[in-house]
Length: 558
Image (cartoon, rainbow, N blue to C red; front, side, top):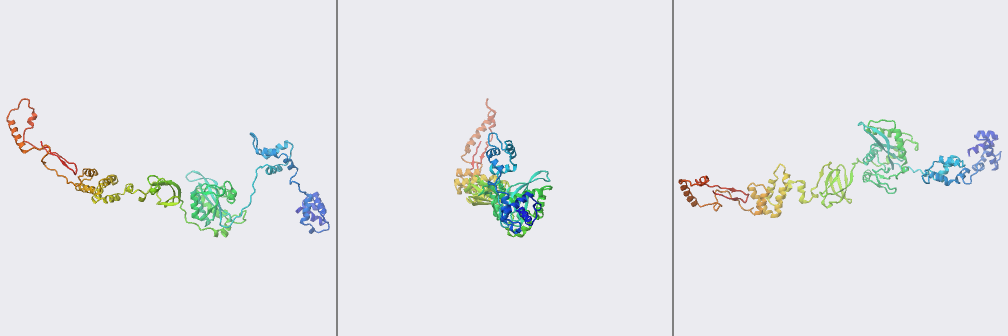
């Protein structure tokens, strides 16, 4: 259209076709065709330049370059006749066939006598044969200031630390959709802890929280990457509730859902990381913050044609949510209540009421507290324990086992004292040991005697045993078995009438006379010397056996 106007303007001014063609920069034959078409449309040589309007120019262009009936030329028509064969070549259909390139197809067509321009064949393959079909795209509006923040992980390179270990470095990049202001957080991993740490640092850098985060489908955030209703991890939801932002994950393998941060990954890798050396990850992070504020934030952005940091300060900073307090990253897991009334969380034990034995409980454990939930209802809270520790609530254990499980000696003594004063004192005597917990079974046996014989008899037996300073549950059991807890023990004496070998005094007198006569007579033949050893004054030997409170004394006189 510009060429036509320039040619007609020179012709109307009276210049020749050669001069007109030189001024317009076209061939003289082309200038002649333009003038001839304008004359056919009714343009006169004496008419002014005002006569050259858009309608006249359109008539000239249509006459010089007539529209093709189907929009293509003869080369396109030749390819349409071989469309089926071209499609087979490009798709690689058939046994042991592989897809061919457009260059190879162009060569095969030339062998068959179909010579067409390569660009025409490439357009035909893309439009008619499905070769590298590209979807159309549209530009999405940036939205309101301070609303959307796109997040993405990008691999930057490797870093060798002071320990000599070479590790892969990832960059968690935050890009504001409205201002394009960005923040970079460097990390060795892509865990939930790393993502939350990066978010906490980003809020400090931006001095506020964006209302919506658009991350990719990283496993730390998305557990079920559904394109319509994605399921977020429990830990990420808890942090989002703490900070007050929403989450709108991008679809799987859809970088166009977050294009602004996708382009930023290449920019960070090429402008910040490439060609630099860092002694440690901490040093690299400090330099990344300075780079984001002074380099990336103050450059002239290609799309905005403005400095992102200035746009952010002018429009977005005042729209952000306030920075939340420091977040204590909790541990979320599901545990089972074992038969010992405890669950294990982070290698520590926590008690649970007996009604939940065998049930599955949800756990939320931060640095201070461990909370246990059953179907959304809070059932127990414990202070957080170090690995190997244990937090047990007496109320969670059975009443008859809580004292033994916790080795509560005072409670055990109080239980015994409730059955009688002497029983309580006896329990104290039993536990009077450098390792009192080793004597707890004896006290529990004493309580078993109370259940079997009653509190009264056991208290009386303990009283008798304390009087005799006998500290033995076995003796108490023997007294109760023989029902001698109320019987006074007999004290030991020299003789007991009616003993097993008791004799009357007269018998000893008579036997003494016989012994005297024997000593005056000579010994008879065959008499053993032992008979002489039995002669002499009579003597008495007393044997006493002590059997506890029910003492049995026996005497033997010989």
